[in-house]
Every structure is written in C-alpha cells, then in structure tokens.
Image 1 (cartoon, one colour):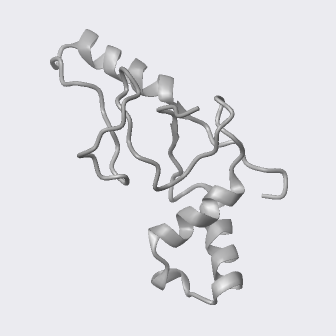
Image 2 (cartoon, one colour; image 1 turned 135 degrees about the vertical axis):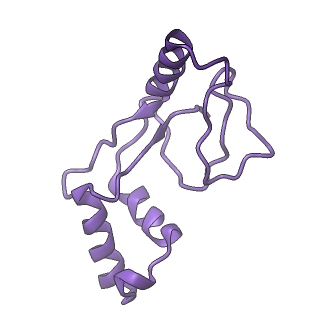
Length: 112
C-alpha cells in the first residue's frame, strides 16, 4: 500500500548521532563529510514499519495530503504542505491538523 505518511527526524534526536556512528563504522566517512542520503539510508534500517504496514523510504515520491496521488513535480526530499487557504487561526489550525495526521513518530527498532 502506498500512503502519504512520513516521519521527521530532528538533527537533535539521539538517533541521528547513532546513524552517524553506524555510517562511520560501515563506510569510514567522517561526520562532516556524510551526505543526507547516506544518513537517510541508515535511518531506513533503524525505523520500524509505517502504520499502513509499508516501510519508510527517504526517496519515496511525495504524495498529495488530500488524495495520496504522487506529486510528479515535487522533489522527493521536500516536504509537502497543505493548500494555502488563508492565514486566519482556523485555516492555520486545519493545516496543522492535516500535517499531524500524516507525520508519524518514528518507531525505533529495539537495537537503536
């Protein structure tokens, strides 16, 4: 099943440092020389499955938050935000609720 869920991993999350250590041990690349793609590949091995049963992939195509259709013109590394419907409090709250619906907390595997 293809879904629109995503995870966000903060640079300040302890798992980020673990990913850097794993990449260094595996590839010998120093932290300041690692690419986001190398770290993302490591994160893919560290997080559990999506709520839909699928797996998270860094390079997964971005999907519409409303219908889950693949967004052909969206860079696979950019976030997709709700349609801009205004800046009043209700519109902002609705947008935040939509984002919260599809941004999942990572389910870190036991060994991480």
